[in-house]
Image (cartoon, rainbow, N blue to C red; front, side):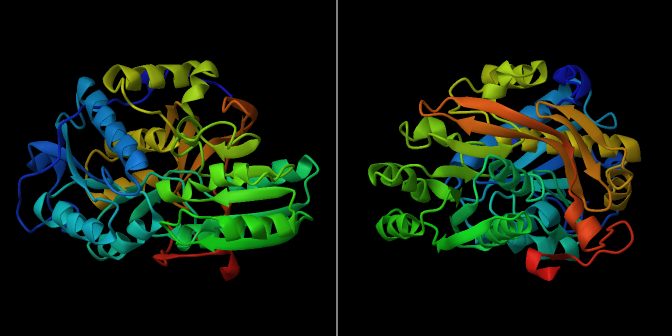
Length: 424
């Protein structure tokens, strides 16, 4: 894969990061479609992330990434000759707050696009409003896949990119049986469907699964079930600070010779730095970016250096921060191609197949048919000292499932719903 100079190729940004914003008219630039960039003093990016609550570790990273992106854009002249402004709210890891602030961004603040949501539950809480008001949402987050919406673009890794790669790599290593523990909401439930689907289709065995309620911090019964099942691989799709307590409890149980795997741990919230070694030892993860890739590519190093210069106390610079930054740059490139911030024109540009940026995680391109991203995927091993090693790199993995399996082309018609593997 070719790695280009990150800051020289990416569009860049400025920070006008407001925690609170002023009010505008009820005729939204997003929803109404009548207020174009030419009629406004600034171009506004709305941000809905979690600075507090259970998702704060990731939400703060994404908010900081948006600040960096806006700052870099403005350093390079803004967009369409106008300064870019960030209008941001703390949604406090609360779906009702997401709904409240989403309406405010669209109706009052008249933002041109919304970058938002960590959890899938929060995304699904605002997606109907986004669609009903012809707004534009970039969901820059690893997630369980399947969203087919005219008004939503998803730039993070999805199951055919992270789950399929992860399971196939572990099967190739000689593992055959897989047990999954996952957060008990749509992310964990659908990701488990994907694990089961990929395991079975590739000759493996599903040894068991369990869904863990959010906020759970005691895992004695879960650990006993895993011990009884005796799988080769334990797939962990756990979410939030409470569920992260599983790993040290699992280590203390004395269970050995089970390989752990995840699409969220480590790549999403630098758990290997917050959880005491060797609790995550011998865990394989798949994702697009980790801070340790600064030793792997010049583009990653530049991104990390830029981040650290602005946020030296940040606990880690990981996948969701990179995705948020890159998502803003993809939208900015579409605005430049469209010559306007008008929603339909920007969507047309995004669907053209020509919107691509060189990021810290390699080349990222919007697939017009699915509104998802074509991106490079890395298999990363966490060793017993919690040091990370890139074991494999798979270039330009496509978000094929909606397009090829379900025959959905959002350029032609949008069902505005989320699909799961049982819909095949």
